[in-house]
Image: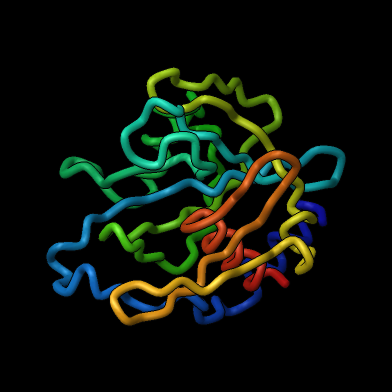
Length: 194
């Protein structure tokens, strides 16, 4: 899929309802939910699109070693969700905000840990000079969008917690196991452009 094909599908399709609209019992009051934003960076190489992902530093207390999109908690002085997503991407992988061509957002995703993550979709240039922050990121890598478009590469399991069942998605790629919120957000993207 080329950038133009992606943009046509992304902008012309109505945002389909997320398959992840459930709410966890762990957090009952919306006022207790913590706001976060992630950047879903897309890079075009020779008319093929890739999704840029990171592997969190192993020494981190929360989610160490997991595969994720650049992003984090909304700060009180952030202007908006786009500012949060691009600020966090700059802090984590040195992606300059001016290199982000924002094209839209996906549905928010609520985590079991009490975060509401708002995904911001952007194209970034192949010339972007990226560098992993050793405090936060162990590795920066790309996965072809076609890998996620192939439904054979999307696995899911049902987990039981506090008398409720939750579907957790997995999208293995080479030696990476993409799962949880990142996989759910990528699945929403694929459902939208498919």
